[in-house]
Image 1 (cartoon, rainbow, N blue to C red):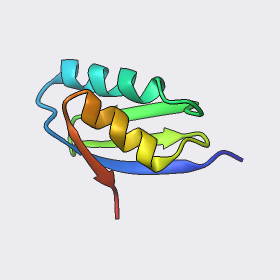
Image 2 (image 1 turned 90 degrees about the vertical axis):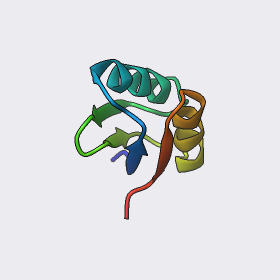
Image 3 (image 1 turned 180 degrees about the vertical axis):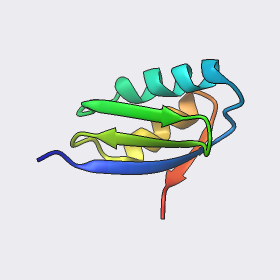
Image 4 (image 1 turned 30 degrees about the vertical axis):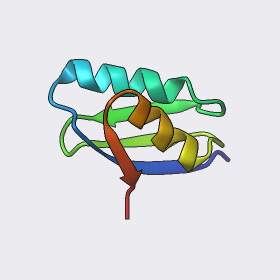
Length: 69
């Protein structure tokens, strides 16, 4: 069974932002499935990727991210 990581993402304003964030997350080693939602600004990532790598990928794409509580 794969790990699931929930992220809060801020700074996305449109569907283009959603595509950019999705592409950034898909580029992280271990990511199997990505679902990014504009509202409420969140992502669900499945796979054994490290949360720190996922957050770094989002920040490199120009957005801010944190683990969802």
